[in-house]
Length: 412
Image (cartoon, rainbow, N blue to C red; front, side):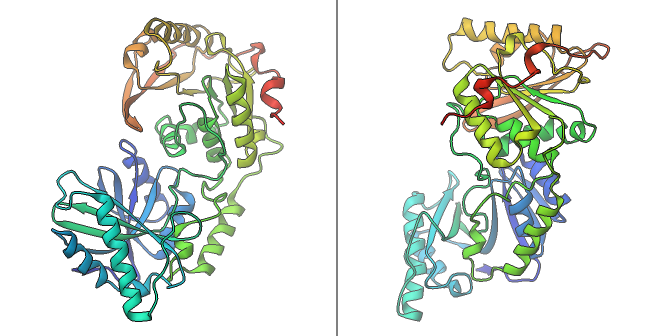
């Protein structure tokens, strides 16, 4: 059995399919040594501070795992004995609740992940009982340490989950639309569309199918340099016995000092939807995220949208309906009319359309210059890039002159 102990740690940053390269670039920018980019994540090396920075600053990572052991386990009993032999008292106080999450590859020798998780819990609890006379409690909510078990073939890997709750849970979302886009995926789409470069130049972003506002809010946090983990009240490492509270407090203070003020700046981001209900949710979430002044919300139909007034051409990035709630003809017509809007009203702009319905996307009537693969949960999707070739034009349509009452005033 291999146990990992060093002042330099190896971390595994999990990421959704199609976003691993962006997670790798983020980790590199935060000072990580990149060891390997794999399907589902990135292996990196650095000091403990790096693990904290990844939890605080990564916009694409789903979890940050700290591997502590790797061993052979062909049966549940072998798994139990190996887990019980690990020095859990170095990672967990007996008074700290914990939980175990297990994922397994299809070819794993141990067939059931739930059973493997139960055996792991028993092994940890039995070690504490034999050494200290009592065992820590198991809890699936509240302050707790999460242990992650991964099974593949006859091998097992055990990690401390430094993130705890998945990192897409930023802390600003109380509601989501009927087909929510995870914050981590929205951030990856923004990276793929080069939004940070557009924002640095003061160019606008328009999302005509904004739903509950995920793309717009994530775009605003990027533009304002807001660390995505600042609003979270809990991370897994806060329950870890080796947690360095002084370093964590210093990193949070540093992140707050880097944030740009949202007030006093003209909106860079324009988000609209035809549903008043989801716009209320988007408005409330943007307010909790501290980015509301950077976003102009409006209730509008994407098929007749005009660019923001007095703006130079910028970026359109949107996630239109895939058609699960619309008939085939209706969704095809929606995409066709949206394509007409892009061609006629957004000359000189670059549009990125994220969709899981490539058949409907053909009705946009523009030839994509890029087709980037992503997954939205179980749905295979593409991010399609459409340069709207033309000389630059200035939009002067009425849609963005003021926020609509429905969008600007949350329901009481």
